[in-house]
Structures are given as structure tokens and as C-alpha cells.
Length: 328
Image 1 (tube, helix red, strand yellow):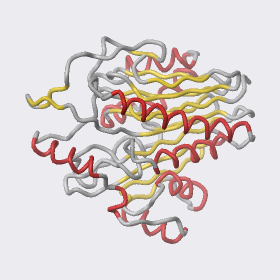
Image 2: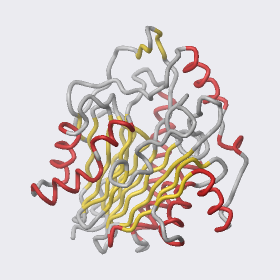
Image 3: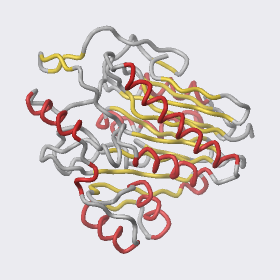
Image 4: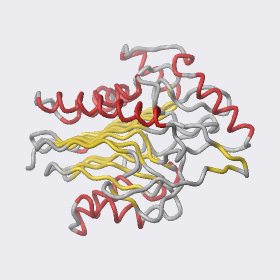
């Protein structure tokens, strides 16, 4: 074992014209979340506790697309989803269609630990939340003025608003990447408004146990009832004996490619290292989809890959390495 490690993301696909101050806000939030995770890992908390703790922090801050600050449905409401997975014995929990649960990732963990099921959705998930006594809030709590404006923009463009998925040239791994100079055009309309994205965290503790968690509000202007990759074990989230993975980006493409599980599969069956596995899956399993992912291995390695224009991400390992980035 190579010691503990942690990775966090705030979404793949970044507006190339994102104002510098917003970039700095994102980096500060990612750094704060890393520090929370590092402190927990140094205190010997298990990886499953660490990923829940970090994702709760991301859900509480409105900067990214999860919890407060979630993307809005076509009806102007919030429907959130999340999943969590504990590598030992591959235990997992997932939720979808949440409208009042303040921290969806914690309800996902309760599904894993306090129910006989792995996945609860919509009214059933909300009823389970009430039974478990989790903190509930009005739907308005999750809605920000910025996202109301973005929904209006999406409706004017007559489109589901994907977050900025402008691809750089080919595959980008953690050490490679560049910002595109061309603006995003949607249905012939230039768009220069920042859209938030999915959040996630993966960690391996000092015992070599991996865990992963992912949370999102989904797509801006999505149809009510739409379910993306984030709550789907094996697609948006996966953890096992070898690694933990959290994905972000175009959910439908991630679902088709079973992206998260495939990273673990090629490590297990092809004998690839963590970064090799991540690069292979992003290149070979997304077809024309745009996405990214973060990963940790039981040996204390961190990795990421994306074929979008940047990804909000941060990493830290027990040997002192720490990095927060968007483009490079």
C-alpha cells in the first residue's frame, strides 16, 4: 500500500471564457474540500466517511451543480441524484429525484446502510428520508438566481444546456490539457455564461480501502424524471478492491460506456495501471460523448482523464503531493 490519497472534481467541461475570479472561486472551493478530506484521512477515518464528508461540503456550496446550486428542470424545479460506494464488499447506495433532501449523498449512504436496497428514487426516496430523519428543506433552498437565468437562456436556445463540453484536441490526462479560445455556440447562439457541473470525490485510506461518491442536479432544462449517470453504480460511480472512480460530463454517454466500472475492469482483466486504465476508457468507451473522471487506486495513486475543455479537479496524497487545476 502506498498510503492514503484523495481526488475531488467539480465537473468536466469548462467555459473557455470563464472569468478569472470564478476560476479562483472554484479552485478555493476544491482546495477547501481537499483540506477537509486530508484532515479526515490523517485522522484515520475510513475512505467511505471521507468521500461523504467532502461531497456534503460540495453540495452545501452553490458554486457547483449539486445540492444548493443544482441545475433546474424544464419546470424550474430541482431534482437531485447521488450515489456512494464502499470498495470493501462493493456495498453501495443511490438516490434520484430528490427535491427536499439537503444532502443527497448522505441519503444515498443511508440507503446503503439502513435499507435492504441499493437504489431509491422520487417519492420513495423522499419518504425514506423522512423516516431516517435527515435534514429537509424547501425546494427553493436549492435554486440560485444565476441558475434561473441560465434556465431562461437554455429555453431561449430551445436546448438542454450541457455544461461547457468543448473538446480540446484528443484525450487529456491530468498532466495534459489546454483551454480552447473559441466561444461556445449553441444552435447558432454564442453563450458565455458559466454553467456548473456534477461533483464527486474518491479516496483510499491508510488501510488501502477505496470509496467513491458522486452528486448532481443533472442537466439544465432537463425533462422532469430524467436520471443521469451520477446515481448509477458502474456508470457514474464505482469502487472495488482495486480503485475508486467518479465520473462527470455527458451522462447518457457515460451510461452507455459504463465508464466507472470499465476503469476497474481493465485494471483487473488487462493489468493496466490506474492512469493507463483511465486514459484507455476515456478514449475507447465514450464514442462521441464528452466526459471526464477522477480515480484513486488501493496503492495510493491518483489519476484523471477527460476529453472536454478542462475539468475542475484536485488531488492530494500522503507523500505531500497536492494539486488543484482546471485546464492543465
